[in-house]
Amino acid sequence: EPEVTQTPSHQVTQMGQEVILRCVPISNHLYFYWYRQILGQKVEFLVSFYNNEISEKSEIFDDQFSVERPDGSNFTLKIRSTKLEDSAMYFCASSVGLSADTQYFGPGTRLTVL
Amino acid sequence: AQSVTQPDIHITVSEGASLELRCNYSYGATPYLFWYVQSPGQGLQLLLKYFSGDTLVQGIKGFEAEFKRSQSSFNLRKPSVHWSDAAEYFCAVAFNAGNMLTFGGGTRLMVKP
Image 1 (cartoon, each protein chain N blue to C red):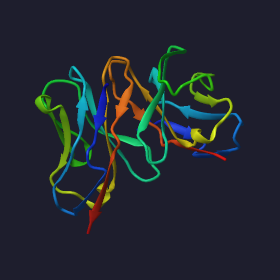
Image 2: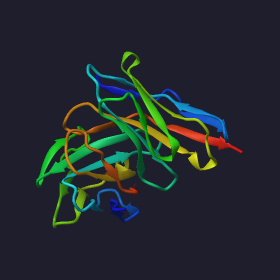
Image 3: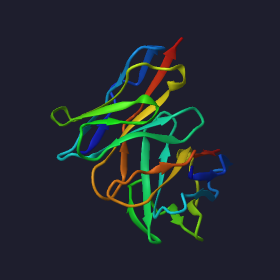
């Protein structure tokens, strides 16, 4: 069964450094998403992406964040200058279509900012 | 504001007992409703979803959920819990066609032998 994959599974970085989290969505899916879960808190929506554009973003997704689909398979989340409060589990998801189509989630990348 | 509430943070049940996990949402119309499960170290796996039609939906692993419009609820049930069901369960809703999921806080299920 096709699945969303994410790399790395765990990333440790120093405050102020740039990080790129990588995701490979399911191949025939057209919509891509990033969510995050700070330890002990809810899963929160960050951004959705379709047709090489951001279609929706939350208040969390400020200028420090960016997303990109650099090729036909990868979908990345970049944090330009990490802060301690960026430490969280980051989940990538993808879906075939819109209108609340089922989103399939990857296993997550645990980001630790020191 | 739109919100999703899972009132129970932790639930412990005995293996073989029945289970009901509660989920309530706040929204002016009927949203799209989902239940996901997260095992330790794993991602979020979809258990079931409700978009329209029959208000009782069947999912994987023997789970079912019932949408009750009058109570703004979408409770998850299983008639007989297995030890492997121990995990964290998340209710999620999509309030509009933008497809952004809003999650509840999660319920951690522990299963006693």
